[in-house]
Image (tube, rainbow, N blue to C red; front, side, top):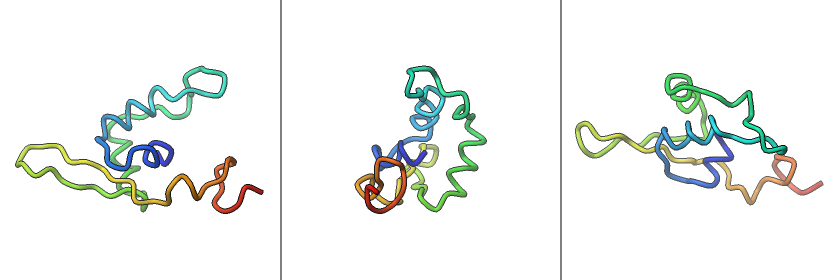
Length: 85
């Protein structure tokens, strides 16, 4: 979720779900541990402090999620915050 959020600051939940369900490993195969459904994904997004929901402006319109975590530039190549050590 964080990887997608860092590349797409505002996004629809369906876009994130598609990204997660088609996520590829380094070998190019679909990753087996990232599949999710809309109920599980909603729960994960709500519980994460790195994501904020913005409701739609119209009565029945779909809102957008915003990534509010740290930008990708602050993470090193190992996925750890800080320097490239």
